[in-house]
Length: 503
Ligand code: AMP
Image 1 (cartoon, rainbow, N blue to C red):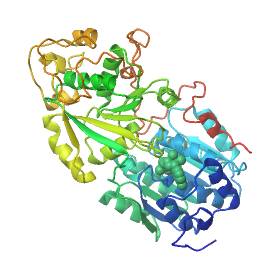
Image 2 (image 1 turned 90 degrees about the vertical axis):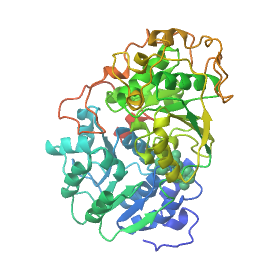
Image 3 (image 1 turned 180 degrees about the vertical axis):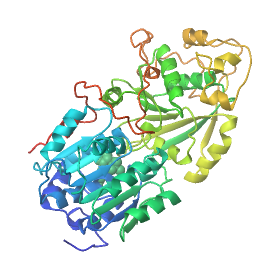
Image 4 (image 1 turned 90 degrees about the horizontal axis):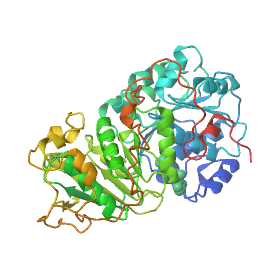
């Protein structure tokens, strides 16, 4: 064990083993990030760590790299994992597993298992039976297996709680507390959260023993590489919002984009609307089947679908390189979510753009965002929108959408069906040009990913068709899960459930 050198600049200085250093070299990291620089020596010392760090700071490597060295010695027994990493969402769990695969490539004897809802339990149990050194899980599925007596937690030496504030938002804290009670008292605990509200601080105090506290870059900071713009609409009419979104998707050089909505039903609505207008689009929210969530993300990552309409399930941590744009179709309810959402672009040194549709009703929340990020955002007025009737501000089933509930406006204009048919037609005569050249009223050029034929007939099942348990909000119910073939996410997910490959 080596002491902490405050002037460290290389991974070798941090006390990692040559085999882990080799893996770091293989993935191409040259310098540790601040969280890695500060956390790794303390994790290697077996100290508890309380890290205030958001995704994108390199915190995953900050805990996984030293864990590999610690777990290198020793063997796991059947159904008794030696370390446990809790993640709030299946996507983040899969991503951490992918990191472990990369960093653990020279430690083929270390076994890893991924326990996430929505995947078949049989395969996951088989891996547990073989003995697991690193168990990466979402709280719901883990508790499910624990309650069934399929897993024993008495051998856990390292416990990682990642994205604790997100766990709190999602109602997972009771599960996390229950899990912590089942763990040995003499374990090492690493606790990470992007923000430290009082509830999280209280929790950290209960779970951690004399922790090393580390804070890197304020959680509210946004990357200078993201060009942030507000598209100011005259009202919260959802038709106008969708129209403005479409115009921008067509007019700008939008290579690919996350399009965030606040509510799942609006994800479905915007998804269907874009689909009807011929955009090649996918949807992602927590009520969808895991297999479909995984497949959709994989398609987005591979570039097969350039536009992804999503809820905040996609806001945190998803590390997809080369995302050119993030659209906030809705101003997020939680101010911090803005930072997480726009963090999906401008990754790995690339530039990106973030655009948020705002209405007069959103101004207070926008001011709060600007206060948080300590920056006044550029405002571009979107004018020249066609009039819409009051009933168009509602969903097709007549229910008001999120935005329409905040602001309703009546007036003559096009129906939803005419919106469908005429999305790319010329605007009514007499309209003024929009105030910003990025938003031409009749940009006829198809956007990247916009097909000339509507896809709706080819893709009859929208996200609204899914009514399964919401992994993000509630524990999945204990029931058999459909056993579909393995689905892939990221690099090669099925491999996560196997032993990491040897060189
Ligand atoms: P994370 O915050 O753990 O989600 O990491 C964000 C991104 O940073 C991921 O794409 C990592 O692969 C990458 N990353 C982590 N550590 C380093 C490093 N030291 N140098 C360069 N990239 C890194």
